[in-house]
Length: 320
Image (cartoon, rainbow, N blue to C red; front, side, top):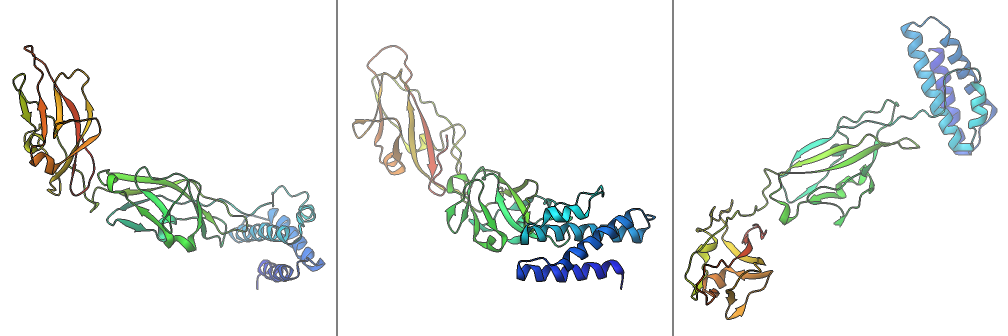
């Protein structure tokens, strides 16, 4: 058996014993000293492929062992002295991992995340380190991230073993957005975990099965002064420019009076009562011809108007 592997195996056994007893004995220190000596010895030998491989292994084992010793009994200072005169820094054998972002086509109302969602091309140069935690760096621009049904805040960290409790929920009013994304970082499972670079998780919402909103245009109606005009349903659907249109062919559900022009001299009424801003007028009220404009008693040309939004029966999303 190769002498460097014998050293590594023996040291590992003593460290495991130290974990149990909470103490390091002189044998452990002796083996660490031997590893240090062997590293120095190989460093001045011809850099053959075999020697380079041995040097890499021993340096990694020595550094990781120092970490474990520090956790056991704060033995770092004594161990540092063993390498005195060596230019290599054997302090922390841990490096941050790297991870790639993810693009996913959103198809369901609630998406349940999986382990692979946050470990795409996970890479850690420290042997044995695996994905462990995920930190939410930013929230989605639309929709929400939830843990067991509770909205997550920025900075939320969870263990990947718990990933199936993390869901993405797209709101009803967000279904017309083309994409949604958030940033995350994934850590390794080292004793002192380090987090990766920030990666982007993107949902493609263009194929979402969620109900999408309608589109609607403007309308101009010319009438005589001092007359009453019934504002009918077709004036807010087929007679607008462009006409009312819904991707799912949902009927218009209601209109909302967003702003009434301050220069109006006529009055807009519902059943004889003046309409106010933010008032909702239902499809049924339009069909029943309850929405009426009463023109001003003047002889000059006058324009009365208001700005409105409409929503369809399917999505319930207001659009202008």
